[in-house]
Length: 162
Image 1 (cartoon, rainbow, N blue to C red):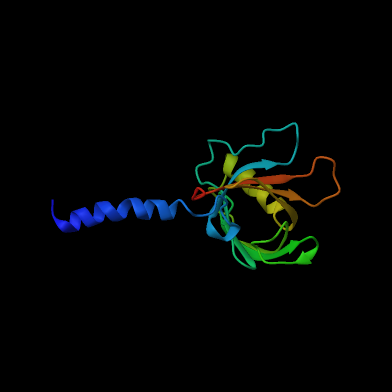
Image 2 (tube, rainbow, N blue to C red):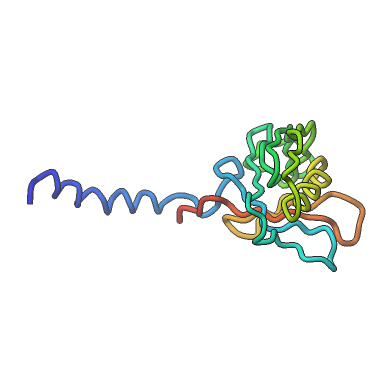
């Protein structure tokens, strides 16, 4: 066995060990977040149907948001807060999404994709409580005065590193 191969074999476990020392929580800005559930009515199905071909998603920046509704891309502004005070995205427990700009809806957006698109277009401009349900899952709950508040469940495209 040549020395380069032995060195590679020796370094690989160290690299894997270091990679496993990462965070057990995926930060909001470190991933594309897939929309898996949209809760608008307790009597209706809330999961994104398997019939939806293009997965809706959200990407958070430090003060911005971009995403895909399942039909069109969009961009917008995001303001993050913690305990009522403006904060960084990393510390936030609350977000306000505004100035959303959705691309023109194509004629071929129909069925389940159109349903999901319409729900996201209706829900996204607004304020949301940010809850972590796991290291790779976020629940955005609409800050509205209703008993059954609408919410969006997001799952990270990447897994936590520990």
